Structures are given as C-alpha cells and as structure tokens.
Amino acid sequence: MIKKEYILLVLIFALVLGIRLYFAFQTPYFSHDAYFNIRQAEHIRETGLPLFKDDLSYSGRNFLFQPFFQYILAFFNLFMPLNLVCKILPNIFASSLIFIVYLIVKEITKNQDAALFSSFISGFIPIFFAETVNSVSVFSLVIPLMFFLIYSLIKINKDEKYISYFVVSIIIIALMHASAFLLIMAFLLYVLFIKLEHLKQSRAELELITFSTILVTWLNFIIYKNAFLIHSQFVIWQNIPKELLGQYFSQLSILNALFYIGIIPLVSGMYVIYRYTFKKKNRNIYLLMGFTLSGLFLLWFKLIPLKTGLIFFGIIFVLLFSKFYSDSILFIDKTRFSRYKTLFIILIFLVFIFNSIIPTISYTSRIIRETPSKHEIDALLWLKNNSGEEDVILASLDEGYLVNTIAERKNVIDKNFLLIKDAEQRLEDIKKIYTTHYETEAIHLLNKYNIKYIILSKESINDYNTIDLNYRTDEKCFELVYDKVVKIYKSLCRMEEK
Image (tube, rainbow, N blue to C red; front, side, top):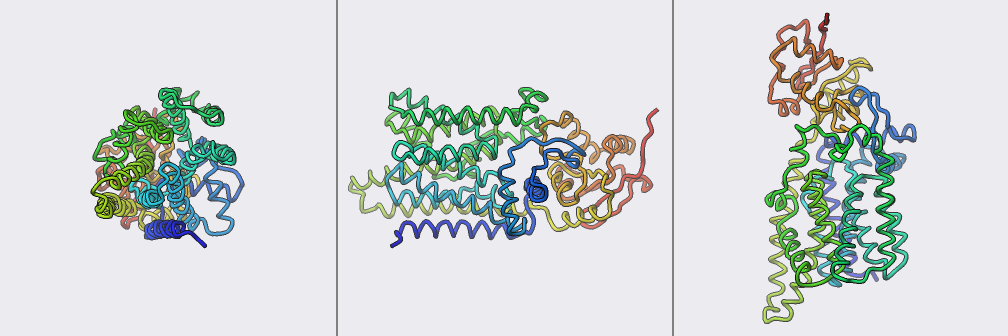
C-alpha cells in the first residue's frame, strides 16, 4: 500500500507543475534569453553538435559553454516539437526539486511533517519559480541536481550506492554550467567547519570532495582557457561591459532577499545559522552553511549575478527553515503551549502564503508580461522573409538572440560577451545609434558594423528612452520598411572616408 506521505508529495508536485505550466502556456513564446538554448538545441538536433562557431551572433564569433543541457533538449526533440519540449521539460526538472528537498529534510530532521511542509515551500520560492518557468534555463536542472548532490553526500556514510550517485551528479553538473564552482567552495567550507568543530569526517567524503574539486577545475580550465587568455582575470565577470555590471551584479539588500526568497525561510534560516554556529553542532547544518557562505562570498565580490545567488539562497534557507520548524515543534511539545501547536502551524502557513505564494504569482506574472510579444515576433519573421541572408540587423541587447533564432540573421550584440574584445565599445555605439541627433554620426556607426536594418521595438524604446530615430529626416538614407507596433528602418546610405 502506498504511504500517505508519498501521495501528498505527488500531489504537491502535480500542483507546482500545474501552476508552472499554466504560466508557461500563457504565451507561445519564451523569455529573451531562452532563445540561445533553443537555437543550440535546434542545431544539435540537425547536426549532432553544438553551435560553437556562429556566423550570426555578433556577425560571426565563437561560443564557449557546456552543452549538456542543450543535448537533453535536443534528445527530447526527437519525440516531440521543440517548443513543447522547452515549455514542459524545464518545468518538470524544476518541480522535481520538491522530492529532493523532502529527502534532505527527512534526513536532517527525521520529521515527516517538516519534510512535507518544506517540500511544499520549495515549490514556491519566488525567484526560482519565476526565473525558470518560461526561460528554458539550465538552472531548472542544475539546481535539483546540486541538491541531490547534497543529499548523496549526507547519505554516503550509510549507503555506498550514493557514492556512485554523487560521482554521476557532479560530472553532469560540471558538463552543464560553470556554477559548479559554487559547489566546490561550499564543500571546502564544509570541510573547514568540520575541522574547526573537531568532528569526525569520513574518508569517502574527503575523497569525493577532492575528486569534485579537481574535476570541476580541470574541466572549466579546458573549456574556458581561451577566454582566460583573451580576458585574463576579467573572465570571472564574463567580460560583461562595466555599464552592465551594476545591473547584472546588483547589491544584495534585505528587501530584495525578503521578496525573492520569502520572509519565513529567510528569517528562520538566519536564526538556525546563528544557533548552530555558536550553540550547537550538526554536520548537516554545516554543509548547508557552507553553501550559504560561498553564495555570500560570490555575491559580495560580484562573481555571480544577484538572481543566481538568490536562487541558491532561497532553497538553502528552505532547508534551514525545516530545522527551525522541527526544533520549534519539539520545543512546543515540551511546554504548556502544546495545545496551541496546530495554531502555530496554521500561522506559519498563512504567513508563507502572503510572503511566498503571492510574491511568486506576482513576480511570475511580470516575467510573462516581459516575454516578446506577437508584434515583435512578426517583425522578426518579416525580416527573415524580406532581408538578405548576409544582412546585419540592429536590435537592443535583450533582442540579440531573437534576431539570430527567429529572423535567422546576423546581430550586432547579444548577452554572451565571452571572447568579444570590443563588447564595451559595441554597447556604447548601439546606444549612440538609437539616441544620437546627428545623421552623420549614425551613418558612420551603421557603416562600421555593416548594419542593414534597425529594429525599433518596445524593448529598444524602453532601453534607450526614445520613441523614434531622432536623425531620420532624410528618407533617402532611412527607409521605413515595416510600420506596425514595431518599426523597422532600412539603412541605405554610406559615408566615404578620405
């Protein structure tokens, strides 16, 4: 007979997945950044290989990335349309986190109710839910695998089969994303905590952590060695232009954390960290604290984007909350307030609804509204059918991948800055093209990048605070060839330099 807890767990999974798919299918399109992974999956499906050398991005460049996630998308594309794969599969991956949270919490607390409650909360972490619902994000799989890795490390001293699970998981993560370095730092901090508290550490743990450190470091060096040679230490910041660094690596604030993570996991998690740092010892809590401190370190030095860091924090603090919850229930049971235990649980659940579920729905709705509209997609399809194959299309930074994937034309810039030596100059030049009042300056820059068409969309209007091209006075140089909600101008003039 199936246990009641397993039925509840499946129902939680179905609820979370159902809400995710409801939002994902609100639009037939995807978030702007998703189109990089979509195009890579299409290329793998057609050729069997990732698109490492791309003639369209930046009008011709090389890519450096780990393609395992894109191979998974391409594999499932063998059986169903890619659009459907990209809507459903990442949300299944992300929803699977509730099972892993359940296993970890049950191991840490030995409390079934805490495990079920924490798994439910993990399904509605605002930042993780919203950022993976329609973006075909690699983190939809990386995050569950990372926390399965934590579970395997906790279990290896009890069952040797988890050694194999650990090894397979770390190899897959290393083949998917450079964020595997966060794991390594967390594991090393965990070892440090164990040494400082004079706790016994198994040989298997040390060997697995050593293996992971060597594997991740070696693999990333092999993949990104050319980037190191070109950008030196700036490769750590992915060669992102200084103008964008403040947006990509924002300062962490309590208000940000409260909104993106939720007040209950954050406050209770901080209390658990304090308690187990100064008053009690628990090796499993030290493992979670290692992740917290490594994330804080990487955020403080702007080595990972704010949203990426908050995703990790959100899940770690849910796990820490589970310890707070189970300890609180045990404490209440020993006092005269035991009769109010149900009221305590209901109160926590109500606060969770107002501070996690409602922000999750609100944030996800905003993300869906920011998805490219039908007007933008139609404009790009018009370019695909009415422009030359070698034509260069100018669009805003966020629309770079769309130009490559939907219009199948060359762009001037997109969000992948690795191996691009003039990324900062390009960003500045594009801003000038959209905002300058001088026709000669615009023509000079358009000629510099061999730009044939300029897209003026809602995205570019918002990014550059303009409603039209200020210098478009001579129709002989700038022909309006597409005029709907989105405008497209054709550049016709050249400037000869003596």
